[in-house]
Image (cartoon, rainbow, N blue to C red):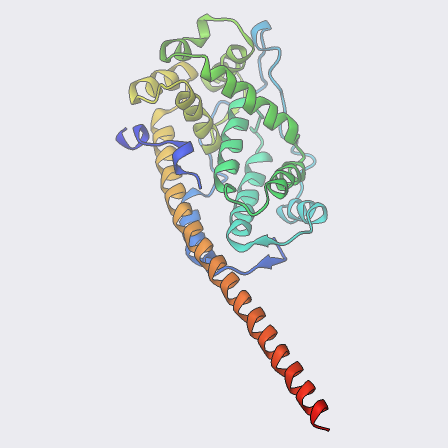
Length: 297
């Protein structure tokens, strides 16, 4: 897939109820529609999970059908724990992302895995790149994941582990994970088994992005390598190709939206500075007139 070979996450990057208005939200919202994480995800196999000694470190987190919060409750969990205003372009992203991830999170076949975590962390970091405050961006991540009743530290830890592992891989060692031992290899074997029908697995676009992130860090982004890795994991390459194309287009539109946002912020900053200067000038004139009137008495 030609589009995938040109995709680079590093190159493409740049309040809920209480919004900071920015005139880019409407145009960006339409772009984000293409990347909605819908509930009818491609699912492979439904049943009890199987584990082996090679995959004993895999985190197991199956969705409970007896205790499923509503989307509104998930949003309120976020709002109760993050009360600062969020610029409108980022607010739109977070609202869309949370609604769709809520549906994914509480799907009956959902099961957390490290590749999924890497995909989400990659998406979040790309979409929130350029946020006015790095500290607030990290806090939002924490609150966002906790609102979904998951562990933000686990997300970051697993994403970092996979990134470090991928940097030490070659194209051949990446696709031949099943013949090797190791913690990450065990995670990938477990995914392959579940996707092959021996357990519960629900494909998502986060998973596709995490998969390509592994390839990117291993400098193995050729379509043939992606095809081999998908085959080894029992994942549909057609679905992965489609979702990576959608994500690449989203990032392109996001860069454009952020450029408009920066222009707007700069313009508003200049207006504020001009108003301050005008106010200072008026105050100086008023003071001079007052002194003139006083001396004239």
